[in-house]
Structure formats: C-alpha cells, structure tokens
Amino acid sequence: MSITVNEAGRLGGNKVKEKYGSEFYSEIGTVGGNTVAATRGTQFYSKIGKMGGAKVRDERGPEFYKAIGKKGGDAVKAKYGLEYYSEIGSKGGKHSK
Image (cartoon, rainbow, N blue to C red):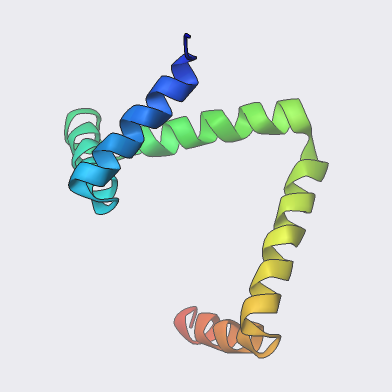
C-alpha cells in the first residue's frame, strides 16, 4: 500500500504535534518569519502580499473580494453584534483626530 505525499505530510505533522504540541508550529513560524524579515527586510512581506493580491484579483475578479468581505462582516456581526461596529467606529474616529 502506498500513500500520497499529502497523506505522508499529514501523518508527519500529526507526529510532530503529538511530540511537541500544537504551539510548536506557532513558535517555528515566528522564528522563520523573523529570519526572513532580518534577511530580506520587512518590505518583503508587503511586496509578496501585493503580488498575491494582484494574482487573486486577476484570477477571481472584484466580486470575489466583495463576497469574502460580506462573509467576514456577517461573521463579525454574528459573533459581536451590531453594537460592535459603533464601538470600533468611535475608537477609530478618536484616533484619526
């Protein structure tokens, strides 16, 4: 019986999680991110983010962003309620002065 690369990766990932805990991934991600920032500069993240955003925009169009924005807004509204928007709007208004 052979397994796919995806299945092998999942098995290995689960072994690591059992041995070191799920926090391990956050820790090594932070170390990796800091290393990239130190070697390439923090602007690197801005650059690759814009490249990725442009690619998604070109492939999926502006309606994609409208749909995911609505999903996110609906999720926030369901979790925190409508009053939340008033609170964060007031906070934002105070900071912009």
